Amino acid sequence: MILGMATFTFVHVVLSLIGIFSGFVAVFGLLAAKRFDGWTAVFLVTTVLTSVTGFLFPLHKFLPSHGVGIVSLIVLAIAIFARYVRQLAGAWRRTHVITVVIALYLNVFVLIAQIFQKVPALKAMAPTQSEPPFLVAQLVCMALFVVLAIAAAIKFRNETARTA
Image: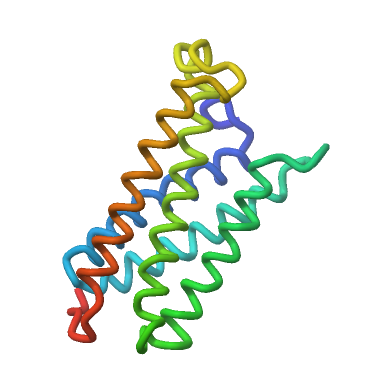
């Protein structure tokens, strides 16, 4: 075990954290009208792997995390298609931006849920994750990501976005 976690869980968490970090870098690039191709690729790969490995844990019943994983994989497939097949041409440019931000949001959504499950003080405030502190945290997070998506779609709309 690594840090009290089984190796598989540790790998899943590391992939998730790399996905979140690289996703924020990629979104920063979109906001700066720069294509951070390497960071975007790392984000897409690690986020796909995070979702896939999430389905490899023992499954006793369908959980909300499985629903998030399914939605994430669909969104990521669209982002990858828009970027690598359609080459950001036309409306696929905005589609890519929006799906990248949604995929990152879903990762952060799950991170917040995990933090509320694992941090004792937060778990005490929202033991079932239906209490106001959890709901407010998720609502604020969603609002921030909506703003990020709109800003990134506006900033990255030109075909002249620079590769960085």
